[in-house]
Length: 256
Ligand code: G
Ligand code: G
Ligand code: MN
Ligand code: NA
Image 1 (cartoon, rainbow, N blue to C red):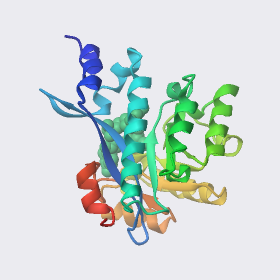
Image 2 (image 1 turned 90 degrees about the vertical axis):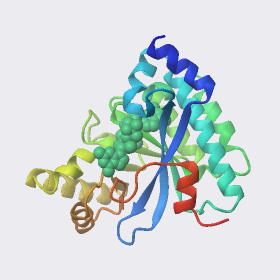
Image 3 (image 1 turned 30 degrees about the vertical axis):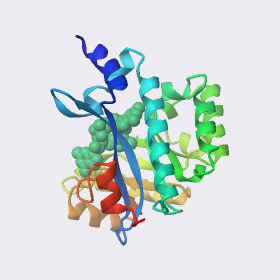
Image 4 (image 1 turned 180 degrees about the horizontal axis):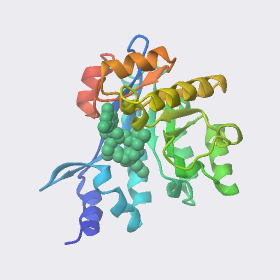
């Protein structure tokens, strides 16, 4: 049984799960939302994070199917929590989508249909797109990004600073905010160069009026440096790992 056949079966056997990692405001550690992260509860190997199987999904054209499942599942969960009065109106739910997802013919239609449900507010949703989606996007992809924004959905550049997105995409494309890649955050304590990069990036993004979140915060020293540099939002193991829905709800959502 090959890995991609196993993965195909996993979708149908209900072995995929969405875990939730909260995002925080660094000044007072209030929760501002969460990122949905895909996991595979593998019968033999245990809980797998997507770095272990996303490449296989991509190579075998399973990514669109999986990401469409993630989209439906997370929005359903959001609708449930909102219906119980447990989703604060100013929180955002972030989903990872790849550039190839956005090129699927019915991708926007599906998103639009899901967001039309009365229990869901499009302003609750933000999409995290890898830098590859932002570097020299074809006119059709640019149009898609614009249509998303028109629906009221926010768009974030994920892992900023590691890929090929140029600074020009910050002014030419409909970006709502930027996620500073964990590698810069984790290098800050040791390397002056990473501190300078993060500091300048914070100034740049703020002056452009965009949102900003630092990923991969693992130490109190990193959190303090980011605060001093004026980075408003953060995410990382210091604050909380990604948690199964029930655990995320009991730890972070207001009671019903
Ligand atoms: O949490 P984890 O280590 O598994 O995440 C690894 C990478 O997988 C991250 O870059 C993240 O953006 C990506 N990722 C997580 N969940 C999803 C998903 O549902 N769809 C896609 N396309 N990527 C995801
Ligand atoms: O690329 P993206 O930001 O979507 O991926 C987030 C990935 O980083 C996920 O795999 C998530 O589980 C992981 N992650 C979240 N917080 C931390 C952290 O503090 N340190 C490290 N090393 N990884 C983290
Ligand atoms: Mn992400
Ligand atoms: Na990221």
